[in-house]
Length: 142
Image (cartoon, rainbow, N blue to C red; front, side, top):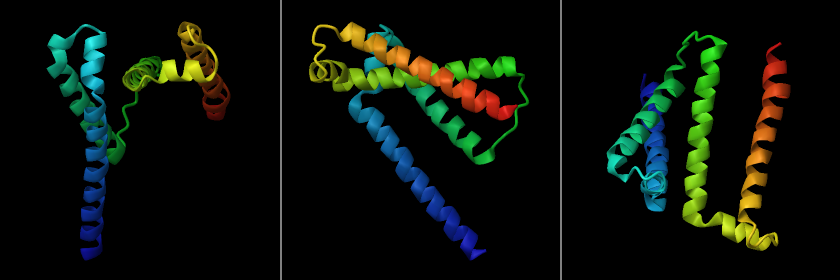
């Protein structure tokens, strides 16, 4: 009984540490306000914050409880698309805040061609994701 209680306390402490780190990361970099500014929806900033909090709580619950939803493959595609869009927007906001693309363009000798560099990254990500899904996820389930 004491072992389980100790493990629960340690798990809660680590969860709080990781969660606090994520919130600090998002807050210090100003990702949410920058995303709201880029999409010209700064008047809905509270909705962005609520979405981040709700998503974090839902993700934690799904991770801990491992629920089975029994959705058809058709709906799973849209859930995956939503997750991909979220990760893409988060990565785009992060790179925007850190000015990654201008620095990368300068390093690889593509100054003034940031648009080309961006399309190369996008196409590489899409092709890599499709390759992974077709050959590892889809064929692995057959």
